[in-house]
Length: 180
Image 1 (cartoon, helix red, strand yellow):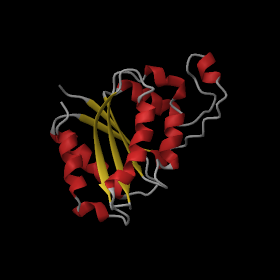
Image 2 (cartoon, one colour):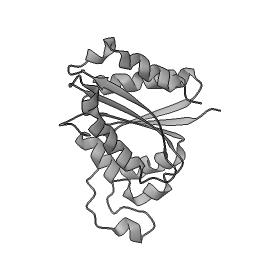
Image 3 (cartoon, helix red, strand yellow):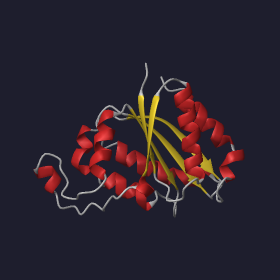
Image 4 (tube, one colour):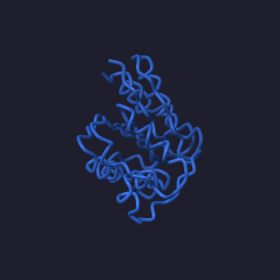
C-alpha cells in the first residue's frame, strides 16, 4: 500500500549530515513506491509557543500567524512522519524543539502515525544520542496511537559530508525502502 511520508528536517545547516540521511531515507521510500514530502524547518517562519492556552479554548487554532498552520495540516494528512535533527548539547536542536512545541493546537489529532527518527552528532558514541531519542519519544508518547518504527543513528559526523561514508547512509535508505 502506498503511504504518504512527511520528513521534518530540523537542521539549520543546509546539506548537512542529517539532510543527507533524509535524502537517503526519501530515496528508499520513493523506490518502494511511496509519496514523500519534506519540510525544512530552517526555511519556515515558526514562532515559539507562548503557552497562552488559546488554542485549547478555540478548537485548535493558534493565535500566531506563521507557517505552522500549514505544517499541522500536513501532519494530519500523512501516514508516516520522519523527524530529523542534529544533536546540539546532547538533545534536539532549537528548530525541532520549537516545531514540537507548536504542535499543541492539534497534537491530539496527530493520531495513528508511524514515526522514524534520524539523528546526527559529532559524538561517535551511539549511546550519547539516546537522550535525543528520548526527547522524540517524549513527544510521540503524547500522540494517540503513535508507532515508533525506527531510528537512524548518525554518530561521529561533525563536518558536512562526514556521514556519507558511514553505515547510517545505508541504514537510512533501507529503512525508507522497507516501509510497508
